[in-house]
Length: 290
Image (cartoon, rainbow, N blue to C red; front, side, top):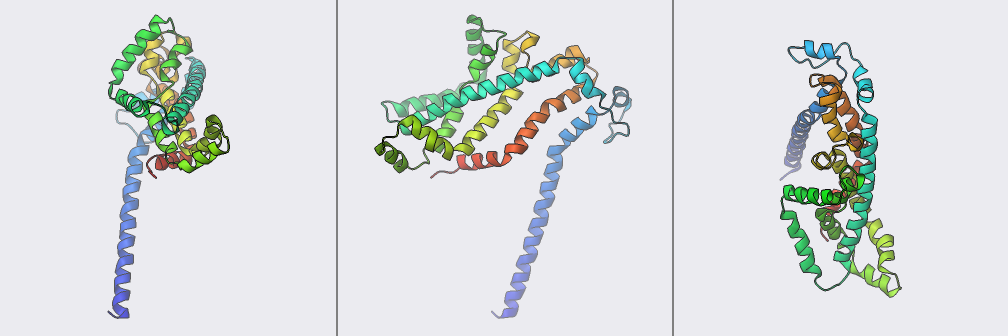
């Protein structure tokens, strides 16, 4: 095969690579439009006036008279700021408590050698097979019997642990070489000090990912808060949307409801944009063994 043949083959390879990239980018753009369109429609609807929205027999993909009145209504006609505060308290305390529980549990299952460790962990994993509806019913009866309805304690207690997150963090802890642990023990380092000085810093991306996912879970939580609270003083932003729909703006004022949804969604979007690199690192680390 002479140099001319090599040049032809190389030229075809470059052309095929360009075609592949073009097709990939076209598919990515198409998929991005599908994913982002609901957000665009939500924001567009939120800046339309009530009259403009109802006058559109055929939905329009733009508006010539945007308004921010719907956003003002979101904070004045219902206590949306209170819902934000409640959700912030719920998310921060629940996430902090859960991290304390799962970090210690994952460390125990990954590094401590105690009798019945593997059967106990297998039992915990089997609990993931129980339907969530049964767990909610049990939690509801327990919290009600303890007299913790319409309290932050009742909201938080059932959410301070997660078997899946314990499993995920345990797998990450086990990727740390045993030699580090043995060397630390030879130097007289306690288990707690080794956990905080070595294991947590190494697995920080996964821990940050778990924390962010838990915050998102708390922020979007609806069924449990709806069951355990009927006092508006303890409403979260998720069931606050229902209150907005029924009591604040009326069932027909869709633009005002969309404005409230935009306001509620902004913190999660900002959180993801700030920590998206750590989330990707944590997810990729969680899927790597060895």
